[in-house]
Figure 1 (cartoon, rainbow over the protein chains, first blue to last red):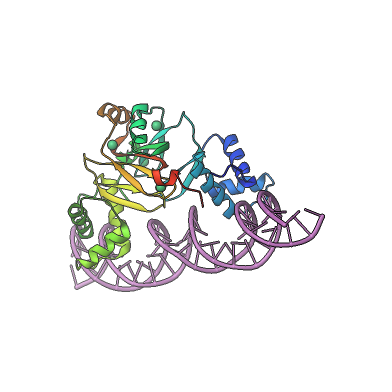
Figure 2: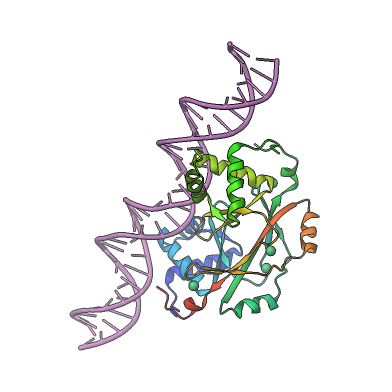
Length: 131
Length: 131
DNA sequence: TATTATAATGATAATCATTACAACATAAAG
DNA sequence: CTTTATGTTGTAATGATTATCATTATAATA
Ligand SMILES: [Zn+2]
Ligand SMILES: [Zn+2]
Ligand SMILES: [Zn+2]
Ligand SMILES: [Zn+2]
């Protein structure tokens, strides 16, 4: 593991901490530039990749194929996602017990985080003709 | 809902049934052409979208942003995904109880399916220098 | 400090799954 | 047989991500 933390990685982490939520790479780049940082887009992608490998941040790939990044935290959230309009509703429940995590670790896998998403139709999309 | 099922949708469903697994749109297109069907790639995407809205098939977005499609079935699988090499290991456990599903339905959401994925480092990638 | 090796960076081009588009085909309706 | 709506096709456009490569910063060594 790279003991040393690169300057760009520090900037990315700093912004993610301040943000307390998820953000995509492009927006992260814009926000850092607005802060006066001079790093390039490619470096942002590289930094995100390194932090992900360290187990410091997590990545969620949206249905559009776009990646969103956030700090890994204990009080994460899962969602109800509508396959119609694409909107998602946050859940404040996590049914994943420590016992299950340990079972996974037993398979020689070091678990950093998990994602759980439900898919279906929201109320609005249920009562609507398809386009 | 489109009561009527289009010819291309029938072909897609037929292949998915025979396949008993997940496949991406491009490969699905190739396989259908090999079967002698003459449909176009755009039609495959359109058909997949319609079937998804009906709640007949499910979509999984891979870490590379690629979508994989499969029939929605009771005996689905979840995975351990390595953030290092990208490989994934199937789990034959699903901790999602009917009780939780019903709680979601209570939010006026019609649930079709769910995805649960664990992320971390596989045994090989744990004992390896980062590139 | 000077020199060399190694890693990080930034601009830009390439990649590739997906979507938009416009022309054409099919079929239902009147 | 028209008219109208819907389905289909090939191709071009899109857009996030990755690869490339020359340049710069940092670390290691003498
Ligand atoms: Zn919706
Ligand atoms: Zn959870
Ligand atoms: Zn691995
Ligand atoms: Zn499950």
